[in-house]
Every structure is written in structure tokens, then in C-alpha cells.
Length: 449
Image (cartoon, rainbow, N blue to C red; front, side, top):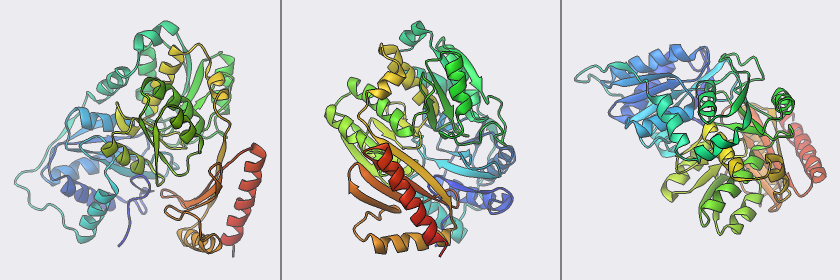
């Protein structure tokens, strides 16, 4: 059976494999699965997003369902609004961190969380069999949803000690990455009395500032603005605003793992004996922190869908990915860049220490990742060869080769781009550098055969 859903929704190059006809037919399939409306539609700042939104809304109407268009909003804003405003489902138009020529669609269930892997298979089956709703009793209508941003910002604010944060008069740098958090994060910070400096604040689907994905390599401008203005910290969002990478008060860019550990410590101090869900490519330090607070860690395959959908039935308090995706269950079981920003403000408002001090006090851990261009055929060949070489490794999601809990390499084909991702952890930076260079060479050698 053909597979259309990747690690996170359906993505493709607009006008090529992601054509308007494909979008129309896939929306028929999603609407058929939802069975009834109203459906909430939102989109990121990509140039093709408004065109796709018109196609999706009219297709939902053709199935006899009403839909509401929330316009340009972050993905977590749409997800939260679906849950709070009692929509039957949602469709977010986004390709997240992919390059500008891409776009995509991400269906959201009525609980405000991405649909499950099982639901993805059902939708793919409907699509392949063209088993769509036909001849409804009435055509649906498209309306405008104006409350999504307001309800989202209020929802986040309700989860933190806003008065304490206001009293601290924090200085924050927001690198909005020319993306969708530009419509929400600055409003949120200003409501809390923060002095805000903006980087890449203009929404632009070509992502001219530093690209759509925040990485330690492209956040030099954020680091410089933090240091120049003596900011308490900086934060950079991806294109659709669900992921965030932090910069501490010294200008050091933190990995998603590091910031997740700091936030988890803060949250578990308030709520010990809790449950944390994370992917198998996150670092091993989370287990040590969880044990300190009599808490438990559950590991999943890579992908926010895997983490979010595990959080729902287990009522987990926290979920996170190493890429800067952080999920706070009491708000919503999805990764949310602005909620993550709020939690960091909450942490620093309660602490007499800086973010850099908080990070330095963490147990030592060294993690990193790299990526290599690779076709799907070469990716299959690569994993097959490595499985034969390392038969005892974990092959549940790509391949994870473990020497001990704090020394491992994970090699996994991306579910969103034609690349291989290589993740690693070691006891020292020197060991990590050596391990990564060894496996990057090995991967390139196998692919080139």
C-alpha cells in the first residue's frame, strides 16, 4: 500500500508531488474520516498556503460540512482552538521546517492532538479506494474563525504565574524565523510585561532570515542580540511555531535535549511522581532526572505523533523531542513553541539563578545530530547493510546501536525529507565527535557503493 503520511503529516513540493488535485482528493479522504463538521482550517506563512486553504475549505464544503478558516496561525494555536472551541477536527496547512518549495497538511483530531498512526492508515485507505462522501444532503459553508489567537494566548497564560513573571520585567529576544509564531509570541510576551527584541519578525514564506528550521548553526544573530541587550534568554521558533530552540543569557545556543531537561526539572519540582514521554533518539539524562523526582520515562519511536498519542491515554505530564519539540500535558499534548517559552519564563521567575547557571548544573551529557542527503532506495539499502553488521541493535525505528545507555548512535531515514539523520550520545564531547565522524563516514561509504 502506498504511504502518504510521513513522520509528521503529509508533505511534498507544491505543484509537483503535492498538487492541488492531490490536496483535493486527500482532503476528501480526511473529511470522510471526520464524518461531520465543523472543521477548523489554519495555515503557516508559506507562499502556497492561502491557495491550499481555499482548496481545502471548498473541498470540505463539497463533502457537506461547514468549516472555519482561522487564517495564518501557528500549528499549536490551531490544535488548541480545535479542542477549546469544540471542532470535530482540524487541518493545518504547513510543511513545518521543510524548505520553502514544500507544503503539507496535518490533520488534527477533535481532542486537539494530531491524529494517530491508525487514523493515518484509515485515511490512506479511503484515498486509495476513493471511498469518499458522495452526494451529501447539503453543501457546507466556510466561515471565518476570529477567536483562535486570543483563546490560545489566554490558555497558555493560565498555566503560569503571570503576576510573578510581570514583576521580573524580563528581557527576551524572539527569533521568529519569518514564521507563524510572529502572530502570537510577541503578543504573549508583551502581555507579561517583557521587554522584547525581535529577529526575523516579518512573515515570509521564503524564510530569508535563517531558514525555516532553527539549528545551532544558523542562530548566530539570535546569540548576538541576546548578548548585546543583556537579555535573560532568547528563543527561536520553526516555520509553523511548534518547536523552539533556546539561547541562554551568555549567548550559548542550547540543544533541544538541554532545554527539555531544564524545563522538566522545573515542572517535576512542582509535580513529582509524574510521567514523561520522549523519543528513543533523546539523550539518556532524562531518566536520571526522572528518578530524582520519583517519575517515570516512556520511550517511543521518533515523531511528535508518537509522543503526543502516547501522552493522551497515559495522561503524561511532559513530552519532548530532541529537536526542540516540548509538550506540556495540562495545556495540550502537542509540541508548542509559545507554551515552551511560557514555561521558561515561569522557571526563571521562580529562580534566583540565570538560565546559563541552570544548564551548567545539569548532569553532564553530550548529544548531537547530523544529516546526509539520501534517496529512499539508498536509505533502505543502508539500514539493511547496518542491520546485518549490527544484528543485536534496536531496529524498531531505523537503527539504534547502543554500547551503554550513555553511548549510542541512531541512524534513521527522515520521514519528511530525502535525508538520513544520524543522532549520537557519549560520555564526553571528544568521544561524541569521534563516534559521529566514524558513523558519518560509514553511512556515506555504504550509500556510495
